[in-house]
Image (cartoon, rainbow, N blue to C red; front, top):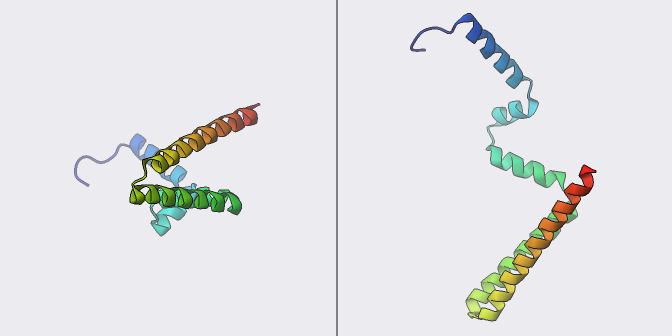
Length: 107
């Protein structure tokens, strides 16, 4: 290490930080396997959800992208507007449901 050595106070703080990080089992596992954090968070969020919810969301996404591709390929503006309107409506409804669910849990 270039530069002056750490003072006793700095060494104490460094050891406290290392001890705190060492007690974090999830961080230890991620560092040991060197998985990207983003994929680990995605995997945890999918595991935390019931399989039926994941399947429904995946089917809705597949259907939406299929309709969007069909609208672009057929060059039908009405179909494209319908897909965008359905996306907007679904997104607004999901946000409202999430808001009310969080509010109900908070009580």
